[in-house]
Image 1 (cartoon, rainbow, N blue to C red):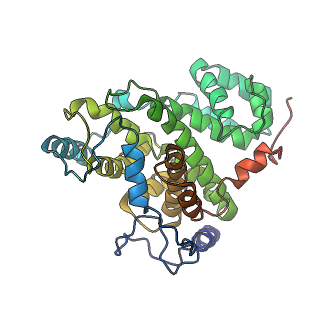
Image 2: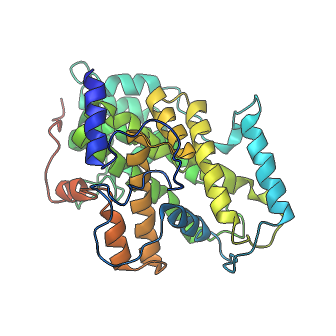
Length: 351
């Protein structure tokens, strides 16, 4: 009953009302409120792209060249998309070398972060240090723009544990285990600089999802944070597979089709990683366009972050970005508070 009440609060906060858990029948993209909804865009008079356009523009920006003249899918693009859709329908949905293997110590680390009474900061740091690759990635995540809590760099794991606290380290460790998925040799048709930013955008969206969920449904915050961390995994898997596509540059329709398929792949990757049920469900619902609280907050965070990237590149204006960010109340506020020196309530001292 408590969980149901909290999810109802999240629905009201996002302006979703009491819509059933079913696909939309009005053609709106997932997470976009109706015009008469309390969280619909204000009457600014500023036209903004819808969510589907933001998704397409974002994926389009990852390519060095892309048609923008309304060209239809080529025959090779249609075949490539068909093959990768069929793969999801098959029995074997393992991804082999396309996604990182989660560290063997992951269950032990997650358990330790949930039990600070039995584990000191020094002990948790030593557990992380036992995996040098994970240790390096943990420090990268702690010092990332989305996560960092102070201007000075954190240069030791024990310092990271003290600053972030155990719940914070739980989030950091999860991000560090997933982050290698963003490291791959890019196809020459892709913009290498843009591809390098995909993980930063992913982490920013995950933090935004977590902060939004923490306001109204804290029990679901970590599972939705994992959904945020996983939301671009399918995109990165499919970008690795572009080598089997012969077209010199994508048609106008291909980026949108690729992004829609990537959402389904993200859910499959999270399932392959044995992530919690709530995480996989949120990703499934996001891919299907279901109007649920988890999918809505995930979508709103992803749209806000991607819109920010598009504003930086000049694809949309700063005024359009402000209107879009109105869809996720409080976007970025928690991160600004952390940077202003507010320590988390769970910050600890070394023992």
